Each structure stands twice: as C-alpha cells, then as structure tokens.
Length: 320
Ligand code: AVI
Picture (cartoon, rainbow, N blue to C red):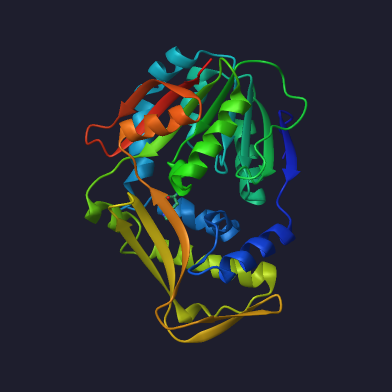
C-alpha cells in the first residue's frame, strides 16, 4: 500500500468487552447478543453478499436514491466538510457523494479492522486528493473522532439503515451523540428503511440462498473462535420475523435440541426451541423517524424517497 493520504487509528474493542457482552447476553432471559459482533472478517463479507441479494432491497434502493440526488445533496450540504461515517467499513456508498461533496477529510469508523483497512486503502488510491483517517472503533460505545483533524463543518453520513439496529431509545441516544459530534452548523445524512409489507420484509431477512442464515450463524463461529466457546453450529437454526406492533424485524438463533454451551468456563443451558435474540431491525415511516431525530436535537432539512417508498435518505441539521 503506497497511498500517502491515509492514516489508520486502532481503537478496536478488547476481547474482554466482547466476553463481558456475550456472558451478560447469554445470562439474560431471553438470551441475546449485540448485533455488532456479527462483523468479524467473514461476517463483514457475508453482509456484503447480503447487500447484493435480490430479496435485500435496502442497499440497492438507497444507492439509487443517493445517485439520483447526489447533486441535490451536495447543494444542501456544501463542499469542504469533514465527512464522518460511523460504520463505514466498506466505504462503498460514500463514493456516490465524494465528487459532489468534495470533503477535506473522510473519517470512516468501523469495528471490523481488516475490512476497514482494506476499503480505506482502496479509497485512498482512488481519490488521491482526499485525506482519510480510518478509525477502527466500536462507534456504538465511543463516538469520538481521532485527534488532530482539521477544523471545518462536520457532516455525519450514516447510511444503510443501521440506525434500525438500535432500539428507539438507544437510537435517540446515538443520534444525540452524533449531534454532539457534528456540532452546531453540522449535518446528518442518514438512510432509514421504511415500514412496508411483512412478506417483503421477512424475505429480505430470510433469503432463499440462505446467506442471511449463514451471517446469523457466523456469530457463533466468531464467539467460538475469539472466546473459546463450544457452540455446535448444527444445533442452531436461523429465524427472522417481522413484529408489526413494534415495527421491527427480529433475528434469532433457535436451539434445535436441548443442549449446553460452554463459554469461558460458564455453562449455559438451552431447551429445544429456545432462542438467542441476535438482532432487531426497526422500520419507520419517514415522519416517525423525523420525530425520533427531533428528540435527539436535529431538525429535518430534506427527505428523499424512491418511487416505491421502500427506503428514505434524510438530511438533518443540528437545532441551534
Ligand atoms: C446493518 N443492518 C442495517 C442490516 C439490517 O438490515 O438490519 C443488518 C442485516 N441483518 C440481516 N440482514 C441485514
């Protein structure tokens, strides 16, 4: 790698944080594990495959919205900003914005170290005029920027409806942290998946090729490898369902048999049919999401939708 316009900041969570989260999650009734641990190297690759599945409409729809409105977005936001992307591990969608926004610095932050490093290095070569500070960090815990960045208007880019993976109360907290990060005069450009027909949603999270199932099960592979656990993969199956009342997709790993699992010297019992809740993916109406963001100190500036109203890209400014 010979690009000179890139710096890498490693703030990766420790093995202890991972272990604490898994032990606490498995001790809960019902058991749950935070979805951020999906993203080891294989998990990140599987997620990239998910984004290209025919059933998984969010990525292609959001990409189309961004492409169709890149100029309008640049007109609203202006150029020369410091562009921050929490969770920007694959640096993929930002390509669409870079020419229009011409940021002075781009700061992708992601928990998946190798994935982030590779993507940032490729981006640095493709855009030699762009200064990149890639930060390997768990942005759900530490929402702070690497030191020594240039001054300037801050723009946070949070695509992919990753905000849907937070419970609404946590989403408000997270958005409040982003508002603090970008400060007065700053912007948030965010992708938000919209409420829609249950069948479309459930197919998106239980695809016919079984990629989402592999992604879900890979969480156990990650835990086995990193924490020395002994989950037997054949004893677990993937389940995704849409809870209309709560407006969320739930993903679970269901124990297919009565079994015990050992993690770092602790034993957990699972009955057949008992599950580990691995992810929520909340869906909002455009107005519901504006109300949520208002609670975090944002004001809606603009909402862009696709023709079928499957997905929204929303621009917010910080309330002064
Ligand atoms: C990253 N996140 C927005 C995805 C989602 O749609 O909630 C994660 C995912 N889980 C299963 N498929 C995709």
